[in-house]
Amino acid sequence: MSIDILIIALGLGVAIGWLWARLSSAKYAAKLPKPYLEGLNLLLSEQPDKAIDIFIKLLAADNDNVETHFALGQLFRRRGEVDRAIRIHQHILARPQLDKSHRQLALLALGTDYLHAGVFDRAERVFQELSRSDSYRVESLQKLLHIYEQEHEWEKAIAVAETLIKFTQDPVACRVAHYYCELAQSPAHKANQQQREQLLKKAIAIYKTSARAALLLGDLYYQQEAYKQAIKQYLRLEELASPWLSEAYVGLQKTYMALGQAEKFYHLLQRRILQSSERMAVNLLADHINQSEGQIAASEFLLNQAKMHPQWIYIQKILDWRVQRDNAADVELKTLSELMGILGQHSIRYRCQHCGFSSHELHWFCPGCQHWDSIVPI
Image (cartoon, rainbow, N blue to C red; front, side, top):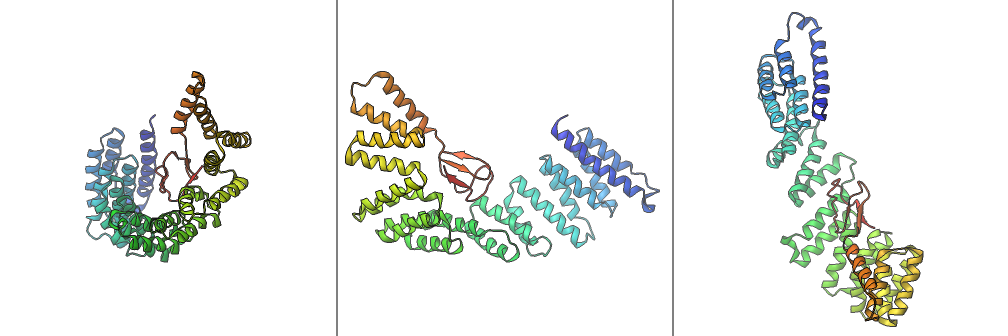
């Protein structure tokens, strides 16, 4: 039995049970539910459109069967037949004398249908209306937030999130900080450094531990040659014990060198290696030793690090330097060096702490589980 058929059977079992419970009451004792049973049989025989026609006629004739149609609409949506779910919920809304609670529930169901179908403009209108109600305000605001994230409408997302904060304990500050960062990196603001700075400062104001905002603000100050301010932003990541400090190393290196204080940067790397043996710190310090003391000293440093904390990149560097030093290096050594380089191109640099999604490229929004700030450097 396929999953779809199993879901249908379970859903229909609930619906049939509900119907027979209704029939046991005095009001329905004299009524034989032939049309319902006919519709259910059509569903089981994979003729959903004919079944919907029957249920819609029953919906118009019977004022007490709205819950059954909600269940059917949800069943269609779960099966991925969103167009049929939309048809059911639209007909519920078209009923005369539909009470307020059922109307709001039908709107919520219809908006969810549109969301699943990717018809964001219609879903947005529905959830905007529901966001003014007391019963479904929070749920509607959360769905609007999802829509604006998908459409990259960051200003609208910020406005909705600020409203949502008033009605729920949902920790949206982190998401709002990312919205400000997205705005700062958008074409509309990227050329205006003053606007970018203001947006990034807003991100930090609302979420003080925003690693992304600190990195972007550090890069911005470097571009403005405000080197001390750039270093301050980069080093905030160390104060926050953030795993993202490794992403600031390149910016820190350029900034300290621009100030003529390169040794401060290499002292920072040495401290970080003693504390956590960061791969990026080891790699950069090895390059520095290579330039200042030569390849042999750098290779010895990397070999010692590899013995304590094995990493493919250390071995690759040692092999590359060996091949560079020895022009007569044998073919096997050269081939091994090339193969290590190929393996390195496909290495995983980032991983989501929520769903395990792994990537060589940086994503602030996880494509797997759609969480913000869940991906960290390995």
